[in-house]
Image 1 (spheres, rainbow, N blue to C red):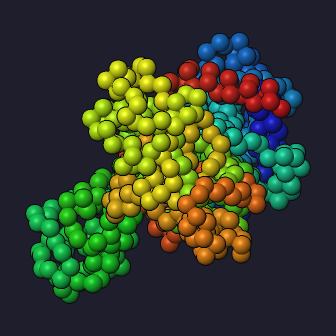
Image 2: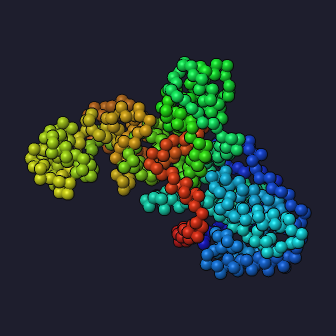
Image 3: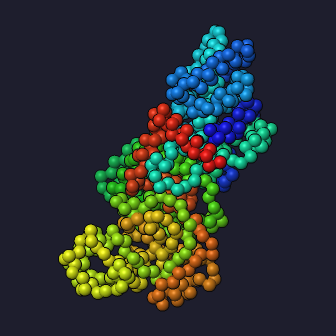
Length: 593
């Protein structure tokens, strides 16, 4: 309730008084500005006859507004004329304070609000969720009637207000509650800006309703880029999308193929190549090779320039799938892009990449391996506290009792050849031969296995520790050969780093911890703990679409099959259930304030 009241305070002064010129809907405090190249995509609503919504008895319209508001207050299913109402507890208070007059009696304000709702698709959301079809139907009836229908005018005004409030809520919180998908979700959700009264009084003075509404969007990249990409791909779809590419054989650089012409056209549609046609269309020349490498890189493929099965499959993915991926990851962005620091380590689990940002600038990037499908790396936020050089590895009990125990029974030298110490529950080291392994099972395994520092240690030469209940951390690995793979979901959940010593150096960021000093510590073959100067945010995220450093959009495989649940949630129209969930969230937010 408190959340909705705040949201109402933010929006209503604007809804009542804004008279600005129509603007392209964007406003961001980020270098990734939206470009005004899509003006033709904005809503062109039919102009209304003069005074169509104002040429009526104010006292009479109040009666109709009050009657509808009273029905909302009494209706347990939160519906008006079949439309579920989000702001059920706010509307009565709002209209009562306004004396039950219309919020949208001004034509410019009304058209701007309608435009906001219709353009909600640029956020990967559905205008239908915000009563848009019902509002448009009512509006057409009102415009076409020879007499004024006070009930329809009142109903339109209330639905338009509720639709804008719900849209604003979705921009702030997302349509889906991430806790319903992951009970261990530990990211804080975005809150209403502080000093809302002053913020919106200023907005009223500056005639900036639309800009203010769009400020509810996440202000961090990559959200602005997602909006641009949503518009771009929707325009590609409206223009017919792309034709399927049929390739019978693998095509390598400098080879000839009649199928290259259709591939070039496909690449041209998505901007991966500059020209749609070439004098030498049948020659796989340098221009085409570079375009294919760019495309491969954007789709999580090895950018070798060879046009094979995986590349053709990526070229032929339907445009609707690309649009869905943008929608899905925009919802993720609404959950996560909140109160981010300037310095952080970010791991994209789905893309097998780690990034280090310093002063909001990407200064380091490296490949990683993440958990397998059956040992998925969790999504969470923590802080890196310290590093351990020459770490020991205490083998997790589940791995020791399930995976290693059978090997101990077969190989009497298994532990010694791998530099692993066998410990009793009391912590005493004992030889492997002192145990009758035939009598040991998974249920009575009473030992600890500790791998000592060395070249074969599963954690390699360094690990990066951040507190969490999953026992997940970043670490080196002796299995460097696996980094050449396109998909690198190989671990039991921890994150293996390709160049961990480089990462250690940039994180320590201290002349005392240069490469020479780090190597000196490693040569001692003894465990060494080094604290960071201050804890550093680490975010383990899961993005199947996003943007590369050069701003090109990427679309990659959903290795953990998580996307479909989000897409289903975005398409969910069980509004009775959704409204109940929203009210639980609102009540929880209110209890925290």
